[in-house]
Length: 141
Image (cartoon, rainbow, N blue to C red; front, side, top):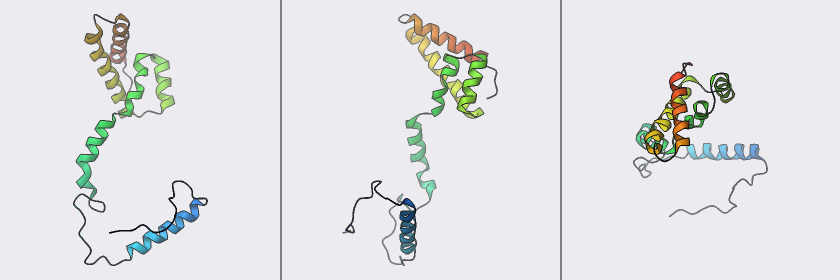
């Protein structure tokens, strides 16, 4: 059984964060000096082991979060030419992210076309525009 030491929950209540950093680092250094010979073994996949053990879980979790390149879809849904270039410059987007953004814009438009073909002509126009812009965009990335 483990017990908490008496005190208050930190939750952002430190007045002097630099002093707290020094104190906490001192505590961690002291813990590192404790002889752990004979201690219970580390739980498999627990903290302190090789990060490679967590690779699959991390990749699965990242996939569930989605790609921030999705934020670039207006580049092809709304902008063209110089305004698209300005949008990219303002976002400071690298080539790999820009390419994924184009992919997301194309994906969304291609999926929307058959789905809305008979029910939403405005969405069909928008999706058709986005496809045309993605295909016409020959910028790097």
